[in-house]
Length: 414
Image (cartoon, rainbow, N blue to C red; front, side):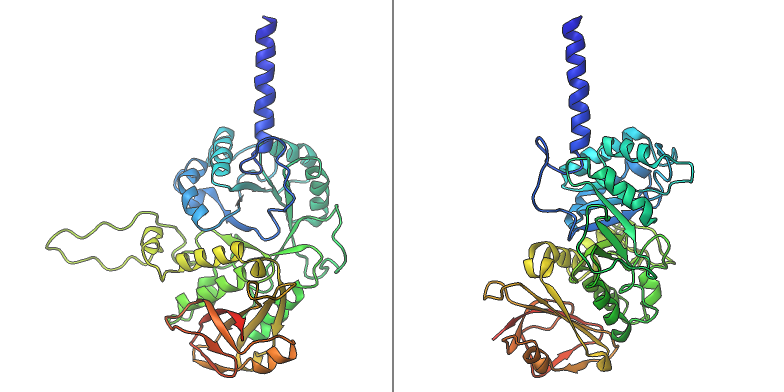
């Protein structure tokens, strides 16, 4: 009996340790890591009841899809709004535990959106979820975020806290402290009333002054879908690709709201995962389904989904895009949004990067020669890294043509 009790105790302790280490994929031991995973993370925010048919149970079947999108963490909304429970309509705690395990195998963490009521014991609630292995929380209230940060500081594995920007009281540009939340949702650049350089550029410049790492977003539970806000009926795909570039090439982390990578709209807000059946022999093909379809976009190299994947790979894999300085250029008069990403030390293997977004429905003739000279950068042309149109070849700084709502990303070369 004593040996049996010892064995049971050991199993219990190992299970507890495992649950706490699931916050960081691939943990073996303490899970300590000198590089913060969250600073330039791609978060994927979803409501389980809208993302898939069977709530929490179905999410693991789409983890390969999310991993291919470069997602670092899933933010679950409307799952555990105020206490230590799961909405029964979405699943059980066992379903959440399984999701945490499965997501960890895909190098994806799980975050929870907390919406505590006034009588909620926030400390007990936070510890309950952290002990189950979640990697952190989003909470709208900055004061409550400070309390959560104190709690997460006591856990290994870089557990994080995200809160919302208060535009009337943004964090002052001073050194980040151990009581600040790790990340700050900043919707300003991606939710301007008009999609213009004159409105977006100042918002992008404002994020440079935040002492807390911002998270940019264009869509969310309380926002009208960006495809419905900005689409013009002619350049819808091109506009969506422009917004994606804004999110994934700026100096920030990124929050994607489920399905925006497929072009979900207010009219068609549901992800269709399976390709439509082929028409029967001798029968005409049915009209195209207007609902965004993951399987159809998967097979189209020019799709919005694959554009997001390429940008996410650049966001994670290019050191200049990930952490270089961001310098906004003023071409508001042409309604072109341009910024330079500059590494600390420019070299042939780490050149400055230039991102150009034409926010007009017409081609724009652009020159960046004077801008580059003013910044004391060397360069005469841009070597293409990515572009949303079908054109080929480099762009010369003296004169370049940017197609309607096109995105061009290139290395500054000479």
